[in-house]
Image (cartoon, rainbow, N blue to C red; front, side, top):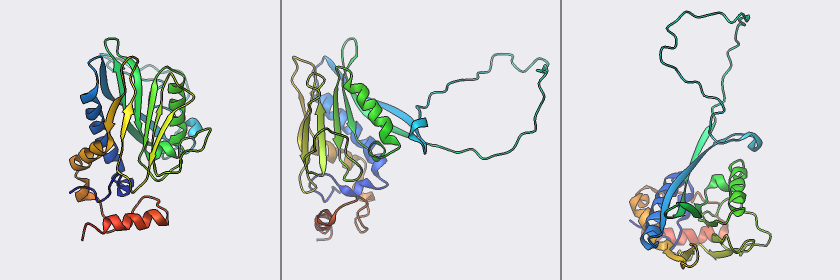
Length: 257
């Protein structure tokens, strides 16, 4: 069963989003890889970060100190350090959620140098504390001769910062080419529109790869069997305005028509 919506399905903005995100990324990579010249490779990478209350102390999951066990350790007598032993106090520890996000990298052969980074924005990217970390990575890409592509299929959350107002739309596809910054290309469309075909930039002299987002979405939606999982009999989890909500209700009504 396919989605009743002509383009993006806002019902995916609920609990199914993490699974949809990873499924879409894999389908998107496959669609790009089919069109890439032999000089390029599209690969999936991931980042994992801790989501803490204070974004200033959030850091990547990499230990500052590691303790390893050497062969034979613990077999000999234990020596006193000469330090006094204090009685401990038992306290609970805070368990911090780890967020894993997939994204696509396009690299050039044979040196595997980074050409482009493709992101499907998630709720964690658009709201603090995750937004702070994503913006830091984004700015790092902007300082390199690397293309950045951002696909925003979420009605909810704050849009990425821009010196000028973004077009008034529900969904966005941003292409920030390494050789054209600070300018970028922004493609936009609405809930009632089909997903467009959009460019993925490569290095000169190679032309952009054109990817049909509608086909990518249809593949991901079918592979994840989201049509069997989404509860269209319940209110849409996306933060829709009145007009969007009425439009969504009209599309959903076709299921039982």
